Length: 122
Image 1 (cartoon, one colour):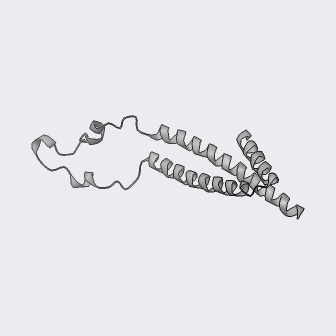
Image 2 (image 1 turned 120 degrees about the horizontal axis):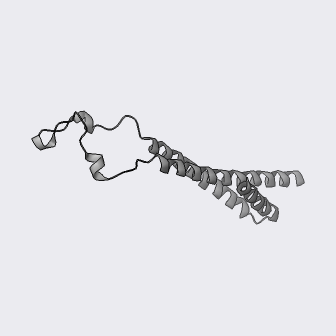
Image 3 (image 1 turned 30 degrees about the vertical axis):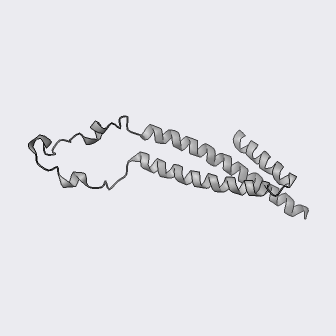
């Protein structure tokens, strides 16, 4: 029916807009993640003993509590988790739009193109 086709085109248009929004959100999250990274990731900076730790030159074992897994993750880790979730959503939406376009219906194809254009414009 005509109403069913119009609804299908509208759904594909909205999925395409959402795909573009997720793509832009992922780029913003990447920028924030890069800003949250520590300035230096050199091995010396990571293994330098902190104040209060035993001196490695004395041959004693380092404090076992300093070697434990950190309870709280760094901020960049949570940005990376967010990026991963955004990526999964982006891939799922992309495959859904592709599957709809592969129906070889011209109206569905135009809805996907219009939604992608509108989503990028916004």
